[in-house]
Length: 506
Image 1 (tube, rainbow, N blue to C red):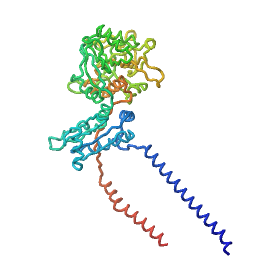
Image 2: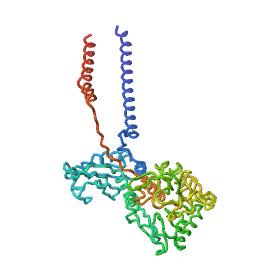
Image 3: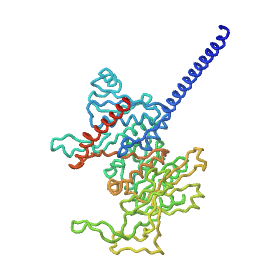
Image 4: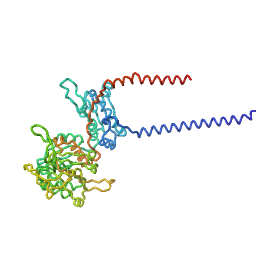
């Protein structure tokens, strides 16, 4: 009997061994799949922001900046008392951490729970124990972002003894600006041309512009070319803002040398009410000519009569420019948006053949609708309403702003230094009054300046308003909610329990 049972035992042993090996292989395969899935999901996961106002969605500027980081940045949140925005700041920095692929590390320090760490940070970075700040550290360079810079506060109820509330959260704008400042090799510097009645950067009428330019880590200064031998060597760009008098031949020569060196950057904004023939002649050598006209149309406009606002028909001298789609590479997200320009504007003529001969590439940044024309005989002192004379005036649509680039190659893979210029037929749009007419002008100016100094990836970051959401329910709706909570849901759970009990019983 033994010899007959031996083959059966052997077959059973082999079968069990085979099953065991299969189980081990299956466990290893499933473990490998689980590890692979977790690894891929950890390295390549995606998040969506479904909040009402995209509260935690980062702007393209921030994402591009974080993607370009070469070395890690450490962020320390130290908020002893800024409870109004502390949660928003912490959540925002988590988004920075995710978008930077962990190049930004975030540490939230509670000084009341971790006294030793708070004391260590205070001694290292030299700040007070009551300061509400975010500390950004990049290779030993540090920058503080104060809580006051990250929020617009509403103090309208202070007279009633109520604490201030957060009107708008500006944390992304402030933190991105600080990261930009500490990660750049040097601070960019833009010089405003002086000596022709232009406003200086510290002028009261330019406070809004200067505030936002400072947050872009661009320092503003002024220069009088009549008192120097050349454009300052540390100039990232020269800004010519609405000169009230023409430039001298010497100034034109210095600007021409600066432009022709291969990396000159000019931001020229013209005063439509003033004639600058030497400047216009020099610009025309590149194929772009200020046409010395006033852009206008006939239509309805808002006027105040006897203290009451009213619509009346007449001449509209406040031009509206359309940002074309091809300007997206320079003006980013405002491409396709209308921009109202305060004050008088003049149009710009473009000679493509002349620009090509000068090896200059042009990109239209602003153009008017067809109903506008360029009035060549406009006189604000003349009470007679001007008319569109096709023989003398310039027919719409008209170019209001244009970008020039000299020295670049058609192959985008090859990067070479180029000369760049942005020419605008209006200078009043970036004043405080002009920005009240259209805030798009600020984005236009900031994005143009960033393009001039080779920051194509940057754009403006608007503050995000705090919205109070009120839920108003009438008696019928409250009754339905009460019925669902106290009747429908418990009844459903009870029925489900009875069904399970009956099934088990049977």
